[in-house]
Amino acid sequence: MAASVCRAGNALGRALVKARGPALLSLRRGQGSLSYAQSLLGVPETQLTTLENGLRIASEESAHATCTVGLWIGSGSRYETEKNNGAGFFLEHLAFKGTKKLPQSALEQEVESMGAHLSAYTSREHTAYYMKTLSKDLPRAVELLSEVVQSSALSESDLERQRGVVLRELEEVEGSLQDVCLDLLHATAFQGTSLGHSSLGPSQNARTLTREDLVEFINSQYKAPRMVLAAAGGVNHSELVDLAKQHFSGVSFEYEGDAVPVLSPCRFTGSEIRMRDDAMPLAHVAIAVEGARATSPDIVTLMVANAMIGSYDITFGGGKNLSSRLARIAVENQLCQSFQAFHSSYSDTGLLGIHFVTDRHKIEDMMHFAQNQWMNLCTTVTESDVARGKNLLKATLVGQLDGTTPVCEDIGRHILDYGRRIPLAEWDARINAVTPKMVRDICSKYLYDKCPAVVAVGPVEQLPDYNRVRSAMYWLRF
Image 1: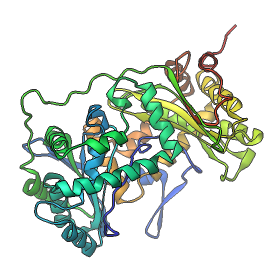
Image 2 (image 1 turned 90 degrees about the vertical axis):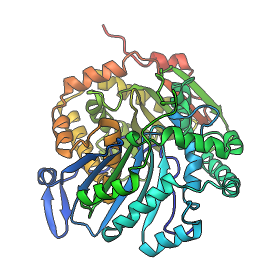
Image 3 (image 1 turned 120 degrees about the horizontal axis):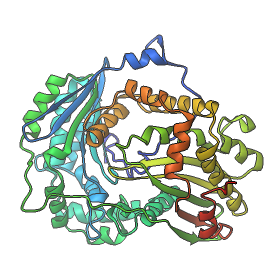
Image 4 (image 1 turned 45 degrees about the vertical axis):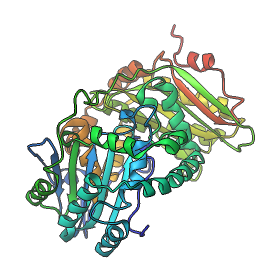
């Protein structure tokens, strides 16, 4: 494949809210320096238009010579069944293997000649196909995206060739123990529901999926009201709307019979999975409770709480002077190689947790202190703790929007999740409104005396049994 045509694998972790690095003091644009407050006021407005077939067009125009444009679709592994789990991931591999008009070589040569970057990813609730290119090539980029999404060749020969590629990639992902750990966490926390499906699907399905399965998946999922054509950078919204009318007006908005995909409720189950392998040098452990849905009013408070726990890697500088209390404890006691607080939010639920990597002899201690920090969030949060968490969260939110591609992705996901783009100024106001009492109350709601989901992979003999882990989810009060 040409160097400029590539795909992104599992997007797991794209929804994780992480807090890393120092608080943001200023943002640089060109040669000028803007304060944080000034940068919020200077963010361009996101314009939104809806076509007659229900497809939405959203864009943010800025003075860039480049732009990113893509199609975000409300479809992912959560919309798959046990039989076709992995269909969306398989389609990623076939999408760039040629269309009905353009064979693979012609598609790759055209993208290469534009100096563009064409990519895709599938998560549990979203699928995206997007291209970063020069602003002057926006019309051709939209046309190529239309071809890739609506007219993929899906030839039998390409399908058979890609089976081996998909299987090799699944093997590679199995070597990423963090991905394995978090996939298993979903599998046990949401067992028996579609949210427990892996974004990539099992290897057995990769061997058995047929062209008919993939065509059926496209016909049932890729409907105009579930699509957002998003763009950011040097784009003109009116031009983008005209291009959408030209290339996407024909996307169907109708379903055959009763084929409208409806998500079934995903219940959370306190449970655990242990995969002991003493030959592995380090253990990967994750613990999580049910978190808030993407549209919950509790989401910002939980994001601040997660920022207070923060993250740590043994390569970080700072040592005992790190701002995160858990990080300082980890350094002082040499408890782990790394840890990361996360909150994966979905349309109706979420996972709020901590993942850590540690030596086999430190598992019990690290689990104890991680849960202890959770209990601190429920009981002893101070003004200074919350102020630090707010600053870290603001820095993270702004830092994640550095460039046209992350902005474009932010637009696409927001329109699918919220029906609108939530501006940074609104996030800032909601973060500023968080108080220590809110943190204590909301964390008590989600954490205190809850049954967690636990996953451990590697030399995990020292991990306490589930009942002990469960008993550490509350403190006796006198």
